[in-house]
Image (cartoon, rainbow, N blue to C red; front, side, top):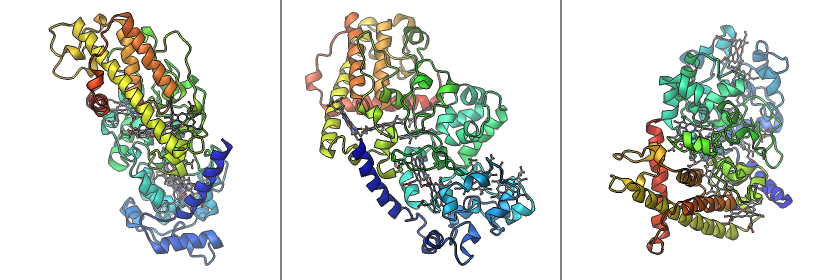
Length: 493
Ligand code: HEC
Ligand code: HEC
Ligand code: HEC
Ligand code: HEC
Ligand code: HEC
Ligand code: HEC
Ligand code: HEC
Ligand code: HEC
């Protein structure tokens, strides 16, 4: 473990060196920042525009006409009204690297002279527009460029749109928007606003702001507090203004049956969203909740920790070395602080060599894929036997919403608990999306348990496994993943 930390430190030094390759590659901007860093703003000009030499057009485009005509002041001007008492933006900001480096309020909020003369939300850049990564991209160009490759930059529109048409259900009750529109978290949980009692119009307004002005699942400020050093450190001990912990092995708040208000405030930077929504694998829930898989597409933390599958009665190996890696998700998905959130094998060193990690991935994926394919064939065999002559009978083991058109889902009371347990584990593994890499022993255990359930009701084994290639198996499984995503985008029932 110690070695990991050391090698990451080396990676980080390299990061620091390339940090100021800006997206809007503007040489004066770089020069100005370097000037502030090296000589503390000597010359009296560098702070004039919030810490930059020149302001990119993409940033100016975010400002109102009124503000675009304003000139730059200093943080002291802002402090006059936005306080110097503890907890004010100004006091917080003085404890950050931005302060140390001469990055002022107006670096993010734009010029403030008009606002100072006549304070209004219309003449200073604020939410929703300030959630745009364009604000940070002015200076963190390299990171912003990486981020653009990630799904966090994109928005799955329908769960956010639904908070406009159905604020009570999709905003307040299910809170789809809290995981799909990170800005909602900023304006509610992070700002101490109680979602249970806030007016429905406010929920709708936030959703509209996200769709119209910063359409991203998780913009920069979902993970980073723009104003303060938080004390939540990166896996190598650096302050990065993170809003939550990167490491947490307590599963209480995301355990089976957890209430929506609890699992979404879970103190983990990634698992506040990447958790299985309190997925409950108990028989009572499997019997009563038959529309779709309760763990959603987001059960990666559950998989990493080994909770939330149907586990049978034998001993379960839950926590592997991966759940104890420092920084957990960020360790593997953000090597060298990379913001595309894609994994590369240098993150696996020194626990594995790169080659060993690559080989193990190939081998566990192939094992889990064939296990899943066989499971799926057995489920189909069972439903063909159970519903002879019925159109589309190979699909009738499925949750109600997942039976493809034009077939009619089976009456769920005709589906025995053994099938319900097995299909829970099938969906648990495909939704996690890592095919055994996060937690091989737990994934294998869930497949074993599912097969034991199917054995107990005599579901036929597949007969043609030998003639199906790995690519064919993968295509079948991936088409299930894509189909279910599509169904979830389209409707809730
Ligand atoms: C003369 C007092 C005053 C000064 C100076 C001042 N502000 Fe404000 N600011 C206000 C008031 C009052 C509001 C609330 C306006 C409203 O709600 O309509 C406000 C609102 C804001 C908002 C929007 C808050 C929100 O709820 O969305 C931001 C951001 C902001 N100010 C930043 C700044 C920055 C940056 C500076 C320095 C350039 C600054 N202010 C200087 C008084 C001031
Ligand atoms: C690194 C960029 C950045 C810097 C620097 C920064 N802000 Fe902000 N500020 C933001 C963002 C983003 C938001 C909206 C998200 C939030 O409130 O966390 C915001 C929100 C605000 C708000 C509204 C808060 C609310 O609760 O509605 C005020 C007021 C404000 N900032 C003032 C300031 C002042 C004063 C300074 C300088 C002392 C400053 N900011 C420095 C990015 C920044
Ligand atoms: C005007 C330029 C500028 C803007 C705009 C800006 N930053 Fe920075 N940021 C800097 C500089 C300079 C540093 C210090 C670099 C260093 O530590 O070597 C920094 C440091 C940081 C750090 C590291 C903090 C630490 O303590 O090590 C984080 C995280 C960060 N910025 C996030 C953001 C986010 C998020 C935004 C947008 C809301 C943003 N920044 C906007 C220039 C900027
Ligand atoms: C606990 C957080 C959380 C909640 C609550 C949540 N989601 Fe998701 N959802 C996610 C995450 C994370 C993903 C992406 C997982 C992945 O890509 O592997 C996702 C994926 C999806 C997808 C598939 C996206 C794609 O790329 O195809 C759809 C559709 C979706 N969610 C709709 C909804 C709807 C509708 C609701 C509310 C009923 C909802 N979600 C509630 C976290 C959540
Ligand atoms: C999903 C969460 C998440 C999002 C979104 C995100 N970051 Fe980060 N960021 C992190 C984490 C975690 C780290 C620490 C990574 C590590 O372990 O080195 C980090 C580190 C940083 C650092 C410090 C880098 C260093 O090496 O000191 C900066 C600067 C930064 N992020 C800026 C941004 C900007 C700009 C954006 C938007 C374009 C952004 N981040 C979006 C999670 C996030
Ligand atoms: C605000 C909620 C939220 C937070 C916080 C968050 N994510 Fe995500 N993440 C999502 C959503 C929603 C998607 C899917 C977006 C889509 O399908 O377009 C996603 C997608 C991803 C993907 C791509 C999945 C795919 O199918 O391609 C990875 C990898 C990922 N997130 C890792 C992380 C990591 C690592 C962290 C913490 C550093 C994190 N996420 C924090 C909501 C979040
Ligand atoms: C031990 C390293 C490791 C850890 C820890 C880890 N992941 Fe992964 N993750 C991977 C690998 C490897 C893949 C598979 C990528 C592939 O299919 O090629 C993956 C896949 C994923 C996917 C699916 C990506 C896709 O393209 O569909 C998501 C989402 C994800 N991880 C999120 C997370 C989250 C959230 C956490 C923390 C709860 C986490 N991961 C922890 C290594 C890790
Ligand atoms: C903190 C140390 C650590 C890190 C970091 C780590 N691993 Fe592992 N990994 C382990 C250990 C320990 C095992 C179990 C070894 C055994 O079974 O002999 C393991 C097992 C595996 C397995 C086999 C799972 C199974 O059950 O067959 C795969 C696949 C794997 N790791 C992939 C990765 C990948 C890919 C990365 C980087 C993205 C990574 N690991 C990062 C420690 C780590």
